[in-house]
Image (tube, rainbow, N blue to C red):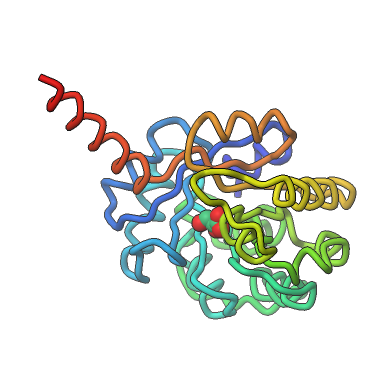
Length: 257
Ligand code: 3PY
């Protein structure tokens, strides 16, 4: 099952994505048709429930971009539902240990590598070209992308062990939660040196262990800087922030009459 995110990771070029927090297939389409490699359907902090996830994933996949689902919590049944609806990858927030990373790999992979059950006759249709049922079963373990979010002090403390877990593809930094967790929150947009150092440590541990490293950002400028630092999978914008910023700036131009 070929996917744009897997191809980008294999080619070793930075891949950029959009972040969907507002439900609706048309929101998905607007984000995905920009030409990004992937769109993250955010069921953790976004206003996206199980039904909205099932609308978003096919809408994104139909544009050729890869739908990636951030599940709300590290729960096996959530991993299963995201992959059953055809997500090309799954992001687990707030990872705390290598043990949790190993459990995620089990939940995300079919036997013999894991314990994923097979339920949906539609998951393979979210790929282009669509694999057959048999091909999907044979290819899913190696093509679907498994991503853990590194955003707690506990995860930093065992970063080498987490980065070494077989089957994890990407360690993805949540800078806001990471800053909060290590006692150096991002306030008024200022990223303190301690947080920069923590992020550099995660980037290095990922690459030293043959893993990719991702990071969340909300502007193209930040995303570009992260790409230049060597990050592999980078959020470039979210629907919330872009709408908020654009609406306010349009109004302020109008009011300057
Ligand atoms: C973070 O920056 O903490 C995130 O996870 C973005 O949602």
